Image (cartoon, rainbow, N blue to C red; front, top):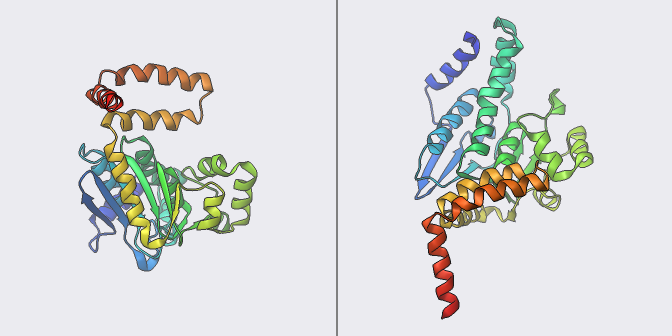
Length: 280
């Protein structure tokens, strides 16, 4: 791995100053807040490295069942930091012996690593989109298992305006939610989607008043906490994989997974409770 990429990551970790990612624990869930509000929470090197490190710590914590990802008002995230693009990215491109491969490393091992952590960990991720969500920030929100929209949320497909293409899974998620033509139109036009319009087009689980966003996220965390731990851990990969399986493949996966559930105390206790209720 070339020194330029490594130096950017090392410098981000060593940088002095305020914490750009705040973590608040509450029982079995945690709220992770992007906290550079004056700049609309852009994914600078410091914020991105901090976010990856904090999420990795929470993913390894067996006591955490759900993680809420949100931003400090007024934005969820402005996406990739323009200063990073004209600074560190250009240095990687022109000064690194490997050129564009070093930018690839940043995209894969920082942006991509966060998206993969969200999708692959057994924790439930809940995006509480409190304002504009652009670029890679939008990709992180779409990667979550539950997506909640504040009435102030805005979907911002900003790639084309700065000469980039959709990245970190945006093309995959939006094509599946909107279909090819609407997704293509969104990227080609760069038009912003207000919360109500985005929700009506199929983006998000709930559209709530801005003041109720945290409460809505907490309710989802409480519902998830009530699930037996194995149900969450086994259902997440099944549901994520099912979208790209044939019906036969999905049924087969369920058939192999279901018998293990019969061996759990949660199953036998749950059946017993229902039987007792039906007799009363």
